Image (tube, rainbow, N blue to C red):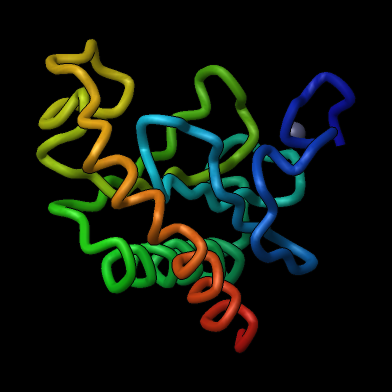
Length: 142
Ligand SMILES: [Zn+2]
């Protein structure tokens, strides 16, 4: 627990599922529907800070989130990223990407190359409730 860390002091988004060691949240990113994060609950910064079994637990959860995103959101690509330069508390970004999104084919942190496609965003945001339910179903079985 680090009192100055935003991922120690809050969920970090809309909490979808949680257990003793990790949680899955829906990021509130208006241009990226279905953007999820898998956040280790304890304040550690690197994957190698985790015991080997914990590394596996974390990555298996990332894979389940990726699979749910593929099935429900039907993205053109899924991006996985663990940076932590701004918030050095271990978390994985699991991001559905579409050719229409404003930074594709760059990362979501790249300089935008087009305006957001409002109609496409609306159609993808409409799938988010189903994604949440899918995640609860697959993670709840862990
Ligand atoms: Zn923290």
